[in-house]
Image 1 (cartoon, rainbow, N blue to C red):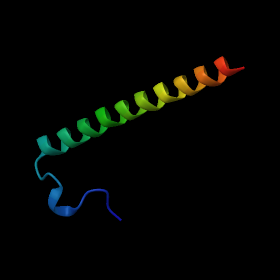
Image 2: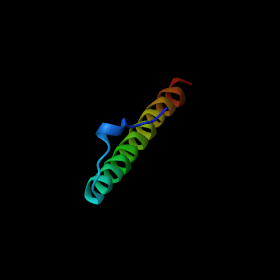
Image 3: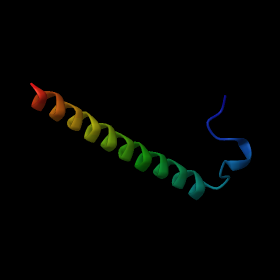
Image 4: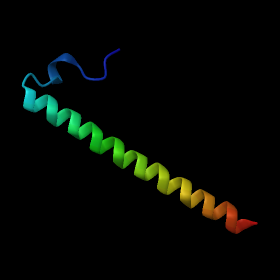
Length: 49
């Protein structure tokens, strides 16, 4: 199973670089959201005691 279908793959180097950059930015945003959620959950559980 491929992550990106063949026809959506960029053929140029610039397109590939953009795809990688987009993936990195998306990954960082996802990590940021996970960290934020974990902090909120921790604050709620710590405050509930």
